[in-house]
Image (cartoon, rainbow, N blue to C red; front, top):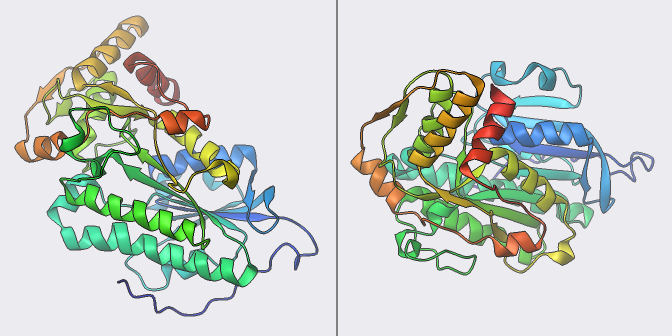
Length: 358
């Protein structure tokens, strides 16, 4: 169990205490990451989020972006918005969750996590960052929600890494047994159960998406073992060689980050009555490989008259084992039934990346 001792913090006034004005705070952990920033941009554009106190959509008074990364990563237009507050910090610091969750009128998007490669290399840190940090957040939401007799909404991203290779011979569904073959998938599986239990008990109103490989990640390559599925597009479209450490024909379920971010907001705003006891939903995905994604990048580059880089292939046995231990295809039927979307093709994913980054 994690250390749940923490200082008591002042709980901000509810909307009744603010003279009836209904305002809601949104917390995004890993807020400077690419998924966190995509969600933040969408929320700022919408201007509203679900208020657990008012029990309806209400104007956003603040978006707190919690991250250990430097503030320079924040886009200028986001940094200039008066509703945005950057909260520098780490989930290893005492009291971090209490500082963020200081009002019952709050919604949380939890993205802070160790990636697959780093998790496999450091089990203890992965347990602390991926599991104990989520519990700390949920306990703070349980506390402020209990004091205000409401259940704050909490969104969490899991991963198809929790399925394991036993699901590779079939199209995995939300009912497929979780048999992870890596520390990253193991911690995500634990967090899925945690989310469901805290929701079942009424401590939070939880929702979660089990994400496949998310592409095409903007910025520099990261430590994820599945980074090859972005590297084979991002660098070639910049005229550079893409580093691929996995077999080019290793098929995996993927989603564009744009479609995934849209689905996150859709799921967060759905009425609780439409959800199930199992609050985890498989993100609708497309099964593809690095070869097909690179071919789509080459096609787009040709259309635009751009120089397209090739592939530097250097198979990493450890990364191949990690990724090969994940499900190779998934079925997002339950998510589709709720109105969540999937990508049409490798070409559509590459075009979305080009639209937003080139």
